[in-house]
Length: 202
Image (cartoon, rainbow, N blue to C red; front, side, top):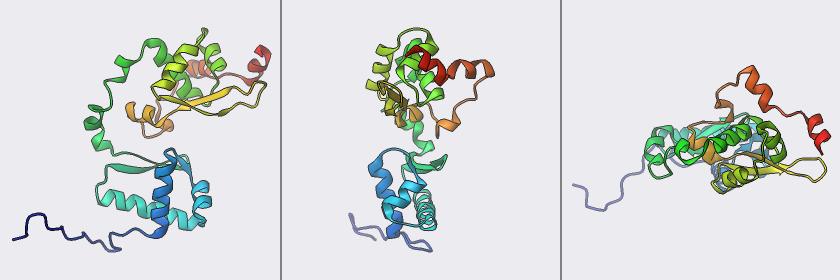
């Protein structure tokens, strides 16, 4: 009989439970960046070739799947990030807020949709799509961490560009932005804002 508190034997697999240095580096980079990281950036940060980086990511994904971690390594449009395992979503949501549609007003949800489908987008572009000022709602969405500043637009004044956050993906149960429902032609035209129109209003 095994003594109480005795250490469990280390689970072995064909290549062993210990990750390679390259996979450990990739894991650390993805954890510290706390946002999707492109393959090119991982190669640069780890001083690795494309083949080494892809092998490290494949090893990392296999390791996380095999040992049933709470996070999954997810790739979307050439960038990689850790997201909570899908089988944990229901359990996690009980700790991370109520239903999203009960927490946000119709106007806030509309603004959030515009950012999601039009990102990166400035506040003025949001205003023009909605037809009303969105300053207060944009501030609210930033405070609740559904959107974040992702850069500055190269126009006079260099306004902030907004995009959605990892929290937005999680609470709307999306693996990536590409998983958003497709827009109708009418909605797509409404959510698009022409740069020439922006110049005319400056």
